[in-house]
Image (cartoon, rainbow, N blue to C red; front, side, top):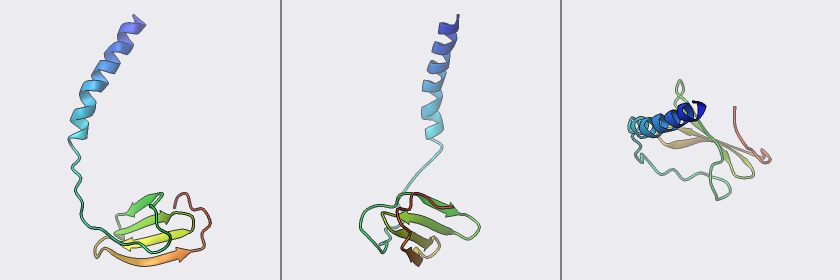
Length: 86
């Protein structure tokens, strides 16, 4: 009985997941050159009230981008090994 219940749950999740994924549409809006070391942003946080995007940079800082203008507002250096932002 338990095996049948688990199998039903797996089947339901398999059918529902693609339908839920269809609700989101992503498209590239802009390419923004960020200051600091080359690489990638580790963690990205978006503040809807201020329309600011906070990106923790690889190995040394935090970059703040205005999402309305796609301009870098502030680059805070000397944040050793940032692995997130609050």
